Structures are given as C-alpha cells and as structure tokens.
Amino acid sequence: MAHREMTVDEEQFYTHALTNHKSDSAVVAFLKNQAKSGQDLQRQAGHLPVTVCCEVVGLYHNNGVMCCNCGRWSPRAASYKLKDHIKSGLYR
Ligand SMILES: [Zn+2]
Image (tube, rainbow, N blue to C red; front, side):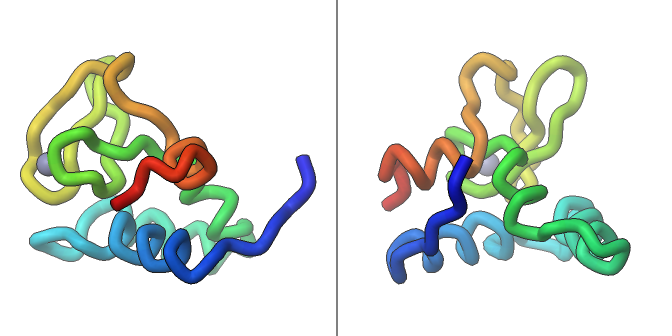
C-alpha cells in the first residue's frame, strides 16, 4: 500500500484521536514506547481502534474496545481502525 501524506484535517483528527484523553493513557505510553524502539508511529497508530463514543483511540480488551477517554467498553465489531477512519473521511 502506497503511503500518502495526510491533509491538514486528517492530521488534526489524528492528533485529536491520539491525545484527547482525560489522562495520559496507556495508548500514549504504548505509542511513545513503539516510537522509541524504532517503529513507525503512524503505522502503529493506524491499527488502533477508534471508539464510537468519543472518537478517540481505544485499546483492545475482552474481545472489544475500551475507550481511552471515558473507559466505556464496546464490542470489537462496532469499532474500526484509525487508518480506515481517516481514509473514509469519517472524522469530524
Ligand atoms: Zn469514550
């Protein structure tokens, strides 16, 4: 898959999804760690699920997704990956 640059809107959503949490979440720590070990941060983040409640990244938990912002759990089938979210223009 060819890499393409994100638009300003996409970039903004991306930042929002990764940082708009009530606390410095496990996801942020995870991503920082990944970046430190030389992983492609954007690529890693793209595979994270987006929550339907707060539209931020969540963590896979108990066959579902736990919201990093409000802690709500939703079924895995109801979520989609961050990169698909951006690609489909679903961000607001
Ligand atoms: Zn939420």
